[in-house]
Image (cartoon, rainbow, N blue to C red; front, top):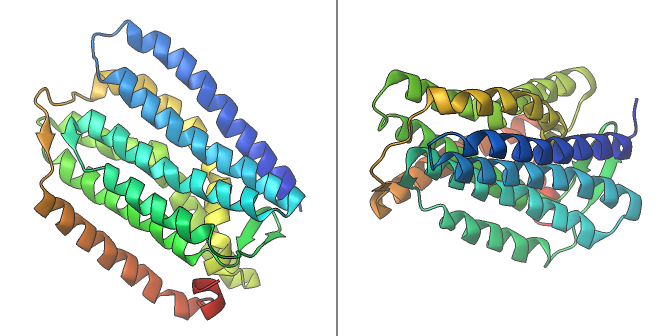
Length: 271
């Protein structure tokens, strides 16, 4: 089996290099298309991808250096990607989704992470995050909130092609790797008692390299299959609160399954 540090370095470098290439290539293509939202959308998506690639690089450096600051910086890089995914969604929906709330969540996670000692270790082709419950929960909260906003936002689009494009966008940017990593984690749990709590975040990040091969297909098609609304709309505070309540409820249901996998420990939650 490959060592984790080799896999993390390879996946991180792949994500970063392809992200840079896609930004240059599609920036040139989009400049010739009379749709002002394309370039801001591209910028936010690429930054999000680059941050996840950066997290992979920092996982590699964490293994090599065993340094807490390096490890925690990587965690913040990773969760920060969700802010830019939300920003990209705001662009294609032409709707204020209150994405700045994500910055408050990320800030709180950063304060917590740099206030405690966190444990991590190399395992197989990924990293075991032994005390990253707060970070992982916040990541999933923003991930779920993103999906709630996307599914609600697509209903505001006029044509069916654009509505389907939102689903394609979600798959091309996050959900393919999420589904595959979840399947692998459950398989690993059943076959060799993989720790679902500590392993799943790094498994997902490693599988994320798959998204860099799906992304260009969407970026090539998006000018033709999606029409961003001309009139900008705002998600009300009431709607935002409702969507966060829904997201927290879904997150709580997911967390409630962890005792079944016998991995939810006090040390994992309170490092």
